[in-house]
Image 1 (spheres, one colour):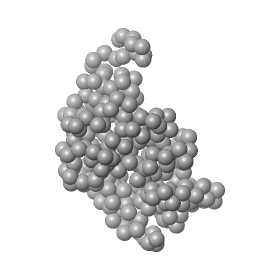
Image 2 (cartoon, helix red, strand yellow):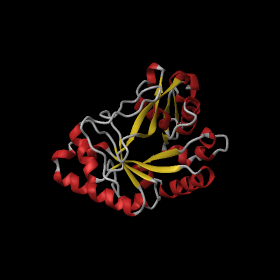
Image 3 (tube, one colour):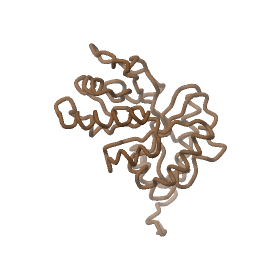
Image 4 (tube, helix red, strand yellow):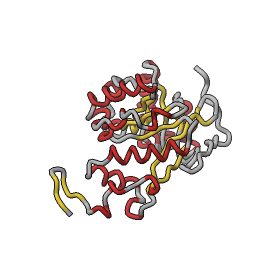
Length: 254
């Protein structure tokens, strides 16, 4: 092992820098349109075959320690876009990728995708790296018409006004806001206010982490546009359409 100015770096055998495309799989989780009942898109989720990195969290934490998130993200996108050429896809990116400008390299496969690409940045990244996020995401919009999604809203700073300055096309509500929402009137009021504010500024809202029919019915009644969670479909390969809960009704059209 050796130390750098950013901390301990593992030997090559434990380094994210040795991860290659053949070491990666992609799982796809459906995102369901609450107005039509159909599958709107799929979120791409990285899965590493190497035993030491079977946990996605461990994989990306190690990449962050090595300042290798940009390289890893490019490997993931190479595998992802090879698997799905014509589907609407949500792609997660790490703040390091934004700061190091990996996403705007002209050879990146997201520029060659045949359908819409939604770039997901976490709420914390949008808050802590606001200026660079604004610059890079604006460039992506201009060059390939990428859609911008703020992920995990409510898990961190929950500064909606700051987040909306990025002009996201979508805001994904963190599962902490959705869990048990059917029995929590205060949480319902808070989520309704978020949805209404997003809609006023032309941003759609995705409710994440839905696991029960009661949670699903509640987010439909509060006006969410899309839903995602184990109730509707688990990550899989190849991509599968979402499953509409039995007895649930469509969200009324605006």
